[in-house]
Image (tube, rainbow, N blue to C red; front, side, top):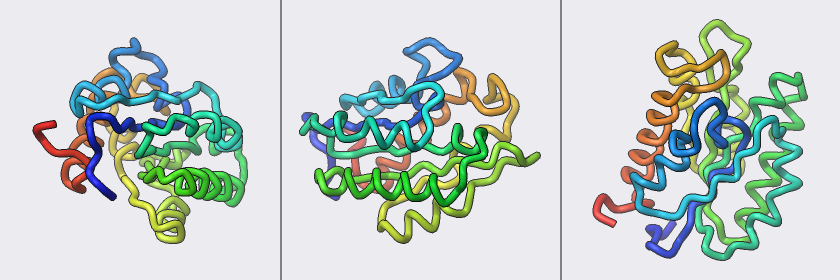
Length: 183
């Protein structure tokens, strides 16, 4: 991956966590990430979306040639609706292939099993990361949703949780050389 330039955009693609459910727009993680990174962040989070819904929206979103990186975070609603993990994995795999075909780098954000007392990342995210050769941020949401001070409810962060997500993603982008500290 080449370091992102000022004209490159980042697509945050997911469901209610990406959207920023439960907080004001300027408290969502994509908005905060745009301020931290000084980059255009496209928030393509939709409340209630499943991975199948996301798959149907992706082609249209990727018509924007400025998008060079996609932060992919789907699966929470699939899990709640008890969809098969195989179907989730297949939908995510197809999304990754679509992005790669458009020369968009993908970072997968692992979704935890929210039905466990201590939310842990579902193993198929790491498998998918290895199979599709994409980077993964594995424990971010698990850590946030395991800490009551970061939660609005059992599946959504509060303003402090979204801020933490944005800061951790920004740190990840710096450490992995997607961004420089002084854009």
